[in-house]
Image 1 (tube, helix red, strand yellow):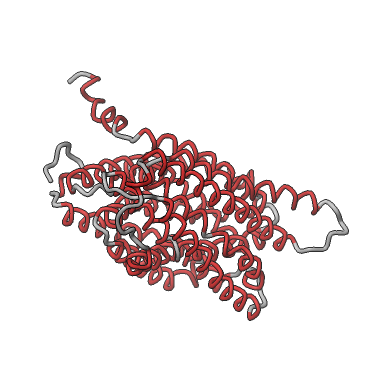
Image 2 (cartoon, rainbow, N blue to C red):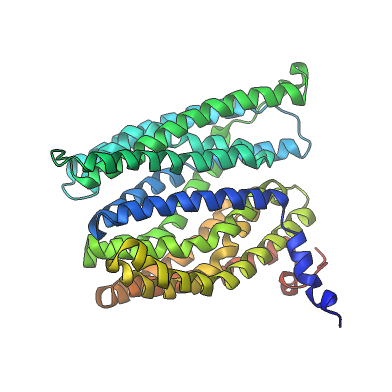
Length: 446
């Protein structure tokens, strides 16, 4: 067999990567660079500040994911319009943006109540998040427009702008801290910079999305055609929207519940070092998330054969890339983390080693979830997989964290990821009508 024949499967695999995924990956690399810069700046203030920051961001992520169904509902509607269904995007976008602001106001009241009741970091500072809550939901909602259209550059720009704005705010915090007369606690300054930067970008993103949607409608069809017929309303599919939100919260808990367990048993400082391990491990999902986002509209194609084929391609790319990258990431972290963040973060390397196998296996989850949600319209299947992973990881962690600390949390998370992804594969194959060999052979029949 010639060298060209031997390497041709890899060439075919590379050729199957959607072009948009490469652009999205480039944007993700910029986002990661900005995110790592933020992490380094915060981490160098000490493990306690890093721990408080990690928990605060986890609460914010819970807010965003709870209402993420709005953006994915919009993406599903728009992707179906792209496949040939007539309709305007601007009324849909306006509707979901109004809902995002309203739900953000409700969430703000809850956060204010928690902040008033709590007296410890970071929960006592949740009033900062409450002020930003009505705006924070705008980005994941508005970007559903571009995800459904398969247009990556505006989506990428919105995603890059948020950490860039936060990093600028943290630079101001660093400058303020040089003044010895400035008495505001470091953690409060860091959290203020975070919510301010995210809120500014959210408002600008929503304004641009509205303008872009109006222009797109004008170019796509005459007004007399665009506005004919009954428009879909998100509240008429509230079950779909709510199921996505609950599913994504479960998925988030799957990634972040271990942080709260570690804090309960071992305090903020240990959370600070473990959160660095989690952040580094999730770098493996860079390519997988890029592939899924760029292929989202095609995975949602109404034809089962088209959707299943795209999902299989995405799964192959995601799993193979993470398996290759995992040992390289561990070696790089072992060398770089203590040198860049400080010797206290040597403690993050061992949990990272235990996390990586599960994170690599779970790289396929985003593409499989897109198939369940965007093609089948059954986000509850994603919820089932995430719930299984959460149940396993928390059960193992509860047994191990009291004595093993962050390592026990990492073992629990990795175990949950691996067992749940096996179930996710089986669910996908059954609904796609594919044989098991479809995951590693070309031209499998649907």
